[in-house]
Picture (tube, rainbow, N blue to C red):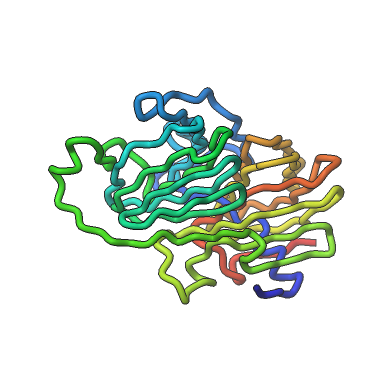
Length: 288
């Protein structure tokens, strides 16, 4: 674990987001609220899925997709492969038994598992309560890349890849501020270059104490996506635009957009923060 100067902490807090397409603007507003959508059954009813970024958000063009998955105890996704796509699983509640080729890992609340592209995988709810997790696929998921059932025998895919596991958020790179904020970098292919991480974004877990905030900053060339796990945040821009983001919702912030983020709850707020391409110190510009 490393401790970095407060200046760098501000840089990574709002490590969130998705890369806009070059041919059209990803959103009309500098800061957008992404509210939960109704879940739909998937895998013949073994699970439900609610999109966060993807077909449900056509105003946001990202090079990954993101969603919320729930699996009842005893249920599982059938064995399948995602061709050309790496999938990240962040467990919100419950216990996930995750098969990745010849290896099986169990992940619980707060743990992250990154599955390399093309592996034979399956995710089961292994506890007594519903398994709930955030899934991120990069490149973005499309039905064509998913191979399951009889189709598995028809494709010539040979993999033997191990999952990348972050078992404890506080075991990541720690950044802290005196403004009531703590940030733990879970995945960053640039900062953690001693390990081959098959995605281009970075992921951080953020805790804001009551009254905690990050002053105005902007991230050059990358957009932010902040998914609130617990509590509520308020994201504001210098021109007066403000949105409140409750638990289960997300804030999408355009590249280069200056913003301030505050804990809007009376208790500690926890969120996931993505930035794509991955955050580096020189990307963040601070504003008084």
